[in-house]
Length: 609
Figure: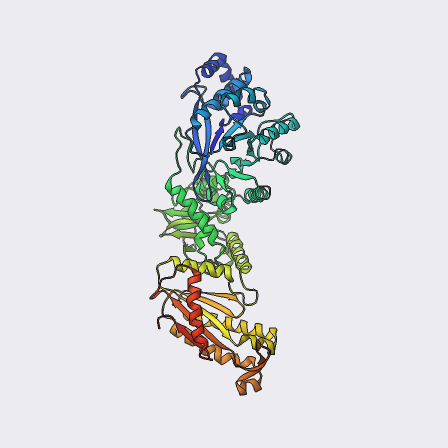
């Protein structure tokens, strides 16, 4: 995908009076010389997929002669409008971009950021398209996008949209640039109905800290998915901005953080690509996290820290420039040594001699030297307990997160509560409504995870025997109580095995599953069976307990004796066998369960034993 854009061309109206005076002095002659001598350079900036980290294509940016007064496009296009040479300059920029764009890999999209006046000019098709052999009926034009700058005024919107519709009918595609600024309007967006919208950098800047921008970006993303319009976020300059855009779901992005413009068609660096892949993976993982398994580092906000030598007035300056920051971590040699909350610092300044005492002295005099500092991998639940155990005056202080003992970021109480709620809702969505245990989506994810890791594991399948006749005799309400009892027993016994990291799920009906990161589960199976056999009697009448069976109709409609419900446990491990899919595991478990059911009482079978 090749993108062409006259960098800042639409901003010619924003030039200062002094800049305009300067350009007037340059004069018509120099501009004509640039056009006649074809002294326009084209540089490229990658447009990157925020899903897989691959380069989607390039935005071509036009520059004047290197080191001259006409190098910046704002000056060039101001003069072109002043001396009525806009068409000639546009033609040159487009020609240079197209010439260099031939180096773009096969099937690359070509973004041509064109002034609305140029598109409506009859010469656009008669001269420009024909000159460069753009056959609108050919498949190649599907790789060319006409990018309309929203910052430019369009006097005749109706006529303009008709022109665009004609080009689209011939095979062209449309993008709307600078969405969210200038003359931007929802009505224009609806009328043009572009294939792409590029979100202006003003909406991207510090989006990780600005809830209003996040809400607006989420709304635009939802709108784009409903209308099949692709979003490109412009002006990404920090890792935090990139991470937030990925979290929201924005599919494409560009900016200096990803890659600066270059005369070469460069790929993004491997560390940036890995960061994108890591953040995408982390986002997917959130669907499967619980408050117990989610690492607090996945929620941390990567605010920068300040040294302990920072003076009071510098802290005030920091808070003024970062209005949403309510605190700051104090760092020495990359490690956190304290925390300074904004309200407490301002409270110190408000004392009788506060300004004299603290404005020109290091902040280590007033910082909290004992804040909560937690490791990246500590769970969301554990950090929540630590946070609420603090005294009331410190309840809303930031929590500092470290990774490999170095400062990583901070957590606000608001963020902690929001993420905990979100994780619980995600989990509830994929959980069995009766037992509250994870359902098949989460079970499959857990099994796939253990299969990928070369570590010992045991997958334990639980199946209730004679459950259907019990349901028929005692009713579904009693059957649900037995299912709930089974889930409770499995959970309690596994919690007692504190040294065994584990997962428990409810496959459905009377089938349960557990994943244990160890092979030694004989004792666990024995304890579960003993507890189940002891407690199941409470769910039968005295007569049935005495005789040891119930009378119920079998599948052929004949009355038959069915024993008290028992529990069959089949355990599949990777001690002697290697499994590649959940299906292979289930097949092995089925064979083991058949072996268990021959016993007519609760029992367990472990493969290889």
